[in-house]
Length: 262
Image (cartoon, rainbow, N blue to C red; front, side, top):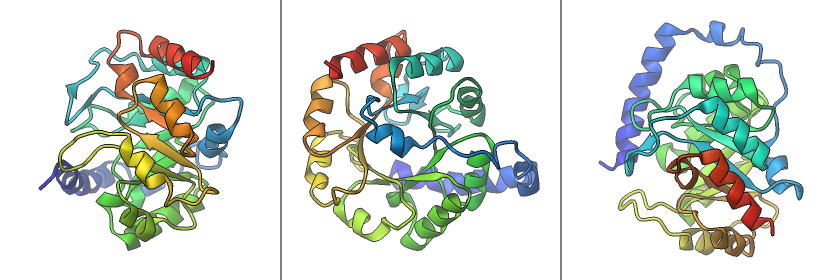
């Protein structure tokens, strides 16, 4: 069983437990339920923005602890000041050391698109995302079947949320892409070996119609990689470790954006 499957198995148990602690009725009373979202898609394709989606990421299964001293308010504000197109927040506790509180903190201090990056398997999680102030949710094709992907995307859309569909190969795009998807993200990490290569994004670029907004995820640490991937039609670039492993993620982000903007 690869790490994604282990996470998904645990996620079902986690959702079941969370439902007992906070009811859907409680979530529906959130002040964010009736508020319009900040569109990450619009910010990614905007010529005035960098296309960078900077991540709040404390740890990962492959790298272990990346940054144990995370000041969410300081980092997120710095990201926005640097000119990011959005902020991605890991809310998974067990494998990534994140929390819903991290996302709430980002939302509290910033008027920018915020992605809830977690392993979505149930409509309850999407309701949670909306209730805590997220603008867009992640659906991982490798973690859910086609029917579930369509159902979750439809539900997220009904709440006004955008949907980022993450794929790892062309079969996942052809099977899981649906009318509700706002952005397609190509993950450059092989889920079996954890090897990372932006060649995956380059190879899959040609199968995705040009009218679909696409982003490249994982393994991007050099400005040259962004400049090269733009030639393949990528407008957005999700980056976490490259910034978070430094002493000042927000400063590292600013420097990176300055270099790709020259």
